Length: 311
Image (cartoon, rainbow, N blue to C red; front, top):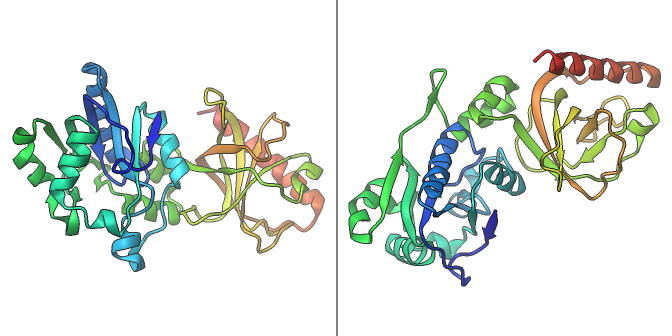
């Protein structure tokens, strides 16, 4: 997958492209319908699939006080798009200059000239251009003149809900992980670079990869089962037990994500890992002794092995 960081300032010119437009926070099932169609049509027509999205949330410029915590960091979003088979991602910076880009310039300079668009895939409520002057209806009204096709994807419903990033964000924050994962279409993803910790896990016999807590949504503190992919080894998944929280026994008050990869003992410092949070196991608990903590972790590992083997 190739990343284009600023389509207006670069020399990249694409042809025969099938473009999905959106912010795509969470890359949830609704987004996946739209992106998958772009990927499918590109393959059918010997073209290229493109996702046009942003490196930052547009609300940071338009209404900074309303910027939500993101479901995915930028690196996580790129990982998910690559997982879906997207050929190109245009990662546009949404700044004041771009916010003032009129709708005709967006269509002519970006979609037609730079991307060589054949078909566009958008949600029913998509807007673009200065003050949101462009929308899906406008794209449909001028598509024949500009020689491209507009595919409007209606709202996606699941289990009685209309899917949205806001809905899924709230489910994650409220600990409704199973439902959130269902709506995401895959497990909730956490990805950061492994940092040096205090090595307590190694002393306990359960070494952990320590990840920094960043400005995104996390489920309520607890122990989770999941799997880990190490950068450069995308075809391998390692079963993992994950602690998200304050680690009240050894590091009270210190926020962290600690990933114990089962049957794995290699050093990962400085490497990026991608952790799927699949199943809530228990809430965080303060143990009275080092030995009790060790027994508790052993039980978590056994419980996760039993659960994952029975799936």
